Image (cartoon, rainbow, N blue to C red; front, side):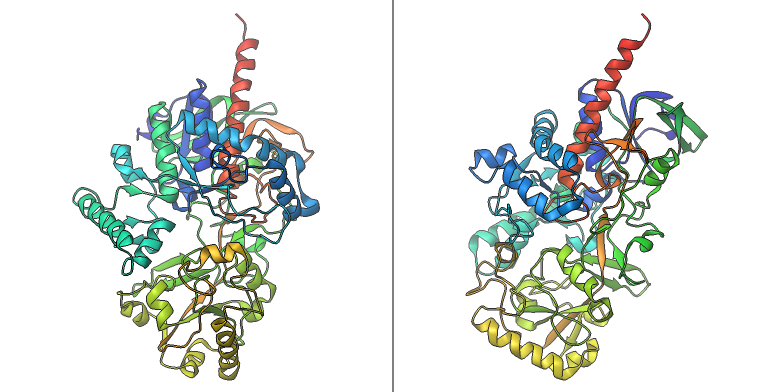
Length: 573
């Protein structure tokens, strides 16, 4: 990166934040001829997008049509209408549906961004009208991080718990291959190939260069940004906005050489990632307590939202949820450092595992989405939060549990550190997790009796296509159910957590920031988690934050391009 005292005095467009929304806006604007400055206050680029699953939810995409999967925008509109309810902002939702495929096609054609459709990727609420089993979720293709050159070390690195062997990235398909490596020659060969690549990478790099999920998404966009000549500055904090009358026309940044004013002829795009890690976030999280953990990067403290508010931007109100929820387990290392693990797709839906509250009872369909899981915790936080995931030794060996890895890993260190609770009997387990022994025994006995037949009459685990897609496809009769019968037994404590904030800056369908009266503030845009959730804080499916982030980053840039053309036409000749 360039020195911050060399920041240009003026550009066409300034983008605050280097996640998916910000880079999509920057790449789109630069392709249309605008000079673009991306300002990132952290020392790495990518934000929360870089540590995400990298999936985008965009109905009506080209890949779905070509694969003859569900590409119906009408069905998607029905689904979102039922999910959001009376609070729906129809112009925003319909714009997303109408232009999401357009944004995706543009970015795939004009940048290195590439996706493939998941042929079977059910929405998170399959009981809702308009839900789909596949076609709306796309996953980013893997990428060679070495193509970033000297910038590879500046890409935000995923948390340790999401890496294998200290630095190897894996996606859902890779995880399934590792789980099957002892029973499938194909899976074993796949794993050996990944290990060989990783070993070679570590000779020259501090982690593997095979990038998947969110790291691949950001790396692809960043490479495209560099190729377009976009100026990306790290470690630069934006202190204020510059106004000319009622128009936003630049920013004031803090640089090593002091404050610098940077003019933006076409405007400023807010894409700083929301306020999930803010010290003030707790006031918007009713039902959570001091144990709550956010997976948002530490820098996502809402300073972008605060800057927008300083010029009169309005905020979203009365969302269904102000955050995108996920249960989190926490490992406290000997030195006091904490490592957080979001329980998204790797364990909760697997057979031989259930969630237990303080009363020793189940309270949720463990295979439902992470957002729904935490909603169940928040429905009765006095007994459901914190809770424990428990399993027997057979399930631990087959699937792992949070940071605990499947066999042949021993996980002894996690037991010593108190993260993984180990017990020789149900009674001992009840004592260690603070549950009433009789209730826990009764819960397990009832669950086991039904699990043998592949049934869960209490919570329906494994009854929806989404549940089954998260289970073990080789386990019968239900991919999500198996008895907890083989000691020792294990548990991991879960607290409420989030993946980021949903409450944000109100915008119109052009991604223009709105004031309290509902009028656009000229020159100001918002996208990503800075933008108030277009789905009102609900969580319809995988990639529901990244899909709108790319779409409205693209839309904001196009509006800025048109604005720049109008300004040029108005200039005296």
